[in-house]
Length: 494
Image 1 (cartoon, rainbow, N blue to C red):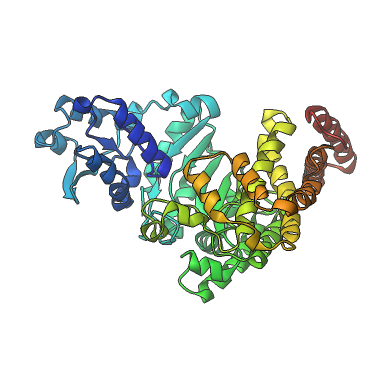
Image 2: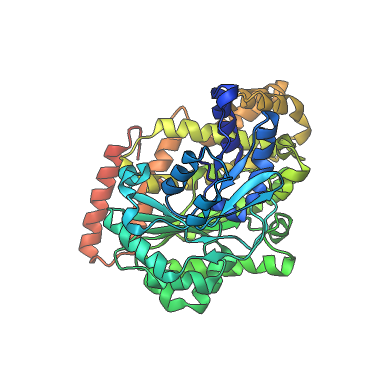
């Protein structure tokens, strides 16, 4: 079985698969992929209890590139480690770590043997994932990755692989790494060596890592930014104290620099074709209403000022995540993440999730504009989120009892059921709060759909204004955009 990552979902799926086999023929091997190399302990923490409960032996396989030749070799020996000659031929080391056999250092298959066209993501989206780096120095408390210096493939190897993948009709390369720019010099060297045929690259990075890369190697990154790439930034928070608490930085002095560095990066990429994605977690169990407002206002400022920022709408009211093997998960249960000091913010989390779902049902647009639509929906939801914070400030947090809510979560109840339970606790105040919040979203008159359409047109027109078209061409393009957007938005009213 192959699991890239050891999230709760991966563990749940593994458990379901194991139970689907008869007890006498359950698999004894978990193939973890290259991520296991820098998160072996996390995989063991996650999967070893699962195997121990079912009295199964657990093994991990780490490889770079397609692993079919090695799995075939293992199959021929019945997944036994006794045939050492096979592993010696494959340049494989193995060792015992806390009861789990960890197999290391598979050599990559020759490029000529790598048939990327068989991959689902390539055939459907034109995407191919590559593993050119591993490791992250951060050690964030919410993340399962242990802090360590990154390892990189040689620039010439990545260039050859990228060139080969492009010939397989790939339109986008996704670099799988928690912080591709962990070592700015190495990462910049890889970026500089990529063949001209690579027109779309997508990877994740910390704010400080990208800042150092751009600051020290501006020519490389200006050339990079001339194409439609995307960089997902781990912003997480706009409050320095929260950044330290989350483990993003060791002290306030370091954390305080993030805002300035983020502003520098946003200005650097403003005139380019590269977009910047934001990873943020604006809510946690200890945050106050005032802090939540600061987070939202800072985020809104960025989105209004820079049109090329991509923010998934599910991030608007996202709670600090629970990752098995993280610092937080070692001291807290998954339920503890929802024991909010201010229950109003947990209520707001479920309210925004619910409204987001309803919103996607109320508006329809051509699939080619999905990316832009998500950006626009995020802006509109964020405005509503800020207004909700103001309304909730007028209600006492003691009105809510979290225990019934946590029980519903444990039973995996739907968000609508949880939201209704929140409202029911208000008794005579229920209708007052519900009416107050519904006025913001204005669902009955399709106010949200109207807001989405107007914001979509506004964003597109701003992009046209920033283009190199002549003034008459800009006006012509704006008129075309208005007609196209209104005709595609089923419930639009402009």
